[in-house]
Image 1 (cartoon, rainbow, N blue to C red):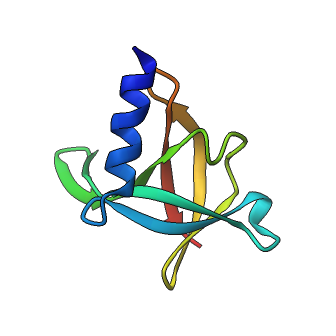
Image 2 (image 1 turned 45 degrees about the horizontal axis):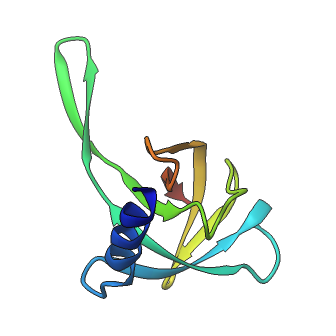
Length: 105
């Protein structure tokens, strides 16, 4: 059953309309590893007393098979944009993906 999910996820990441090429630099150094990502940019609501603000966020999904040791502080380069991983990456329920939150580096 997991093989069917793995195949489906691989197809999504390979789709040029969904997946993007990126470079993962463990510890923020070195030549980096070429990976495929799916970028997510949901807005987050922050409350300050009676006020609310909508804050843009940047996150990605990345396959564990490509970045098994990804961790907080690593760099992700997407085109000319550079991001630092904030917080520990979270896995999906099948353990196939990491969900990663990013901040501009």
